Image (cartoon, rainbow, N blue to C red; front, side, top):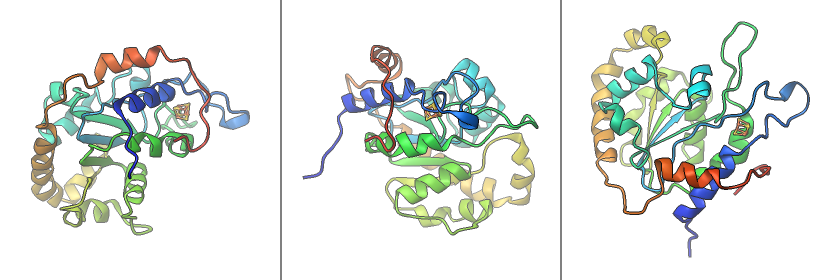
Amino acid sequence: MAFTHSGRDLETFAARIRACRLCRDALGPERLPHEPRPILRVSTTARLLVASQAPGMRVHLTGLPFNDRSGDRLRAWMNVSREIFYDESRVAIAPMGFCFPGQNPAKADLPPRPECRQTWHDGLFERMPRIELILAIGRYAQDYHFVRLGRPLRRGASLAEIVGAWRSQAGTHPRIIALPHPSWRNNGWIERNPWFEAEVLPMLREAVARAVAAQPERGALRGNNLAKATAKIAPQRPQSGVK
Ligand code: SF4
């Protein structure tokens, strides 16, 4: 018999992630230079997962992901309102690194901390079996979710190759739709690949509309209820590959 996690498992697991200090407690140059603030929005009912890279400084300070021009563009691509996008009962948001990783000397954000993926991600997504659509934004999320679901990407595949292979995911479960980051820095890529707006976005909007149409169950843990519940749980030091 297959073991299935309950909503309470997800609540407890999310609390452990929110209390994580693994990178801050590291010794030497790997030590996170600021207090951790893991950012994730999950529920037992969401069917759509926005799988992103890592919070930037602004998200670290506010705690709200995609509350900027990139978020506006992503919502326009998805054709959803802010109300739907931030409804955790319908849309989960989980970056590959839950905490702002800091910046390099050139003031560019560092890559997502690998400790998150090594410690938390497999266990988190095991507890979210209702996810039926994953928007994989950026290469870190694409590499992880395609491999996790047994569909590894070709080594060295370009963004255009990965995003352009969207038809190969039709009929899969969960379905993965790979996207470029909605940052304005990708305007050039979008202009060079007009098929993205002509072919991918209509398909994306149709798939998102289906995924967010699902209604939450009564009593499901989400939003403030989940955050309140997680705040009551004492921090625990995570082990590598926590299940
Ligand atoms: S492992 Fe993830 S959640 Fe934990 S401190 Fe590092 S970045 Fe934050």
